[in-house]
Amino acid sequence: MSENEFDRSFMDDYKSLLPEDAQARFDAEGVTYEVGPIEPCPDALADKSLRTVVRRETFHEGKRFPFPIPNGWFVMDESRNLAPGEMRSLHAFGKDLVLFRSETGEARLVDAYCPHLGAHLGMGGKVDGDGIRCPFHGWRFDGETGRCTDVPYLEGGRPPAGGRVRGYPVVERNHMIWAWHHLEEAEPFYDVPEVPEFEDSDWLPYEVKTFEIATCVQEMAENDVDFAHFKYVHGSASVDQGDVHIDGPYRRTANGDFVRENHGLGLAVLHIGEAFRFIASSVPIDEEHVRQVWWFTAPRASGEGAAKIIADAFYSGVSQDLAIWENKRYRPTPMLTEAEKPVVEYRKWAKQFYSGDFE
Image 1 (cartoon, one colour):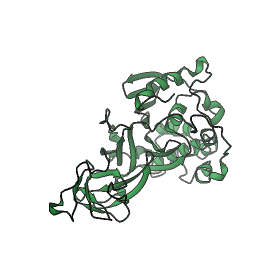
Image 2 (tube, helix red, strand yellow):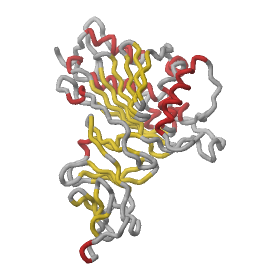
Image 3 (cartoon, helix red, strand yellow):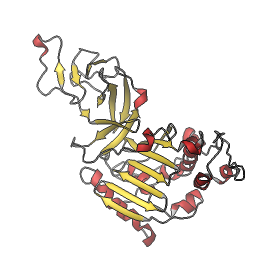
Image 4 (spheres, helix red, strand yellow):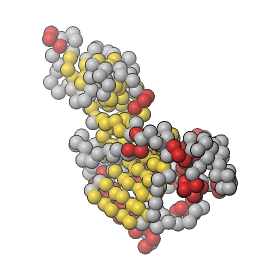
């Protein structure tokens, strides 16, 4: 099969996912497609001037949303972006953080500021074995526990009791570095799933899309069970929720070939038959901003450009949600109809991922 040929069994799956103008690019008779860029609705993702921003009333004690940062696993970076001995500064969970890879290859994440005199560990600090040294006075912190293990100018290097920065549990899976956030520093109570297609040589190298949105994780998560909005926002037919299976932090919905698996509030895996796999991580930058990380793969048999086509289609579609997400008010007690029953059920399920009372 040549690079631009599709096995006909995949054609209908892909074509139905694309916007009308993109569908026209498919030649059903020749079973070929163009790999050229889909017309970007994503302008709204790159150009914030295209988004409508309005003045907002004070809703929840001066905040847009009543939620704290949710507890769960969230993507920090791609594994391939971090070599042994490298570090990078980032912001997530409302905090400045330092992500680094130890000299033996383990990814680590710690709070950025030294408890001694407040220097930023990522600005001039150095990876030291499995830990990180502060650029200001050379204090060394263990990468896994965050405990201070050495103060070089003290006799014997004995660290002060209780000296530590917060360290976060980290795993690497599906080509990504995941960190566990819990407001009360509790241990992980669910796992990051392995999606075997991302490691399978019969599937294409993954395609990544990353963007930021002025909303919270809860709002984006609820969007997936608000089935009526598909007609009015995306111009597509409303869909049914399908079969729902819930097991603690795991939630699975299936409607024909469409299967969505939620592992916690900010991690979702989407299967559409054998056409493609899609993993999404909604990373809370703070209580009012989300970094969305999506990555896609498709069978090699579907053509070398298949993963990119699907990624571009989803990327275009989300731009239609932006003006609503970035300007809506969260209603703790909304006026709902029978059609919105899935939203109520989803909110009940989602509460387990927050610490404390928030409504």
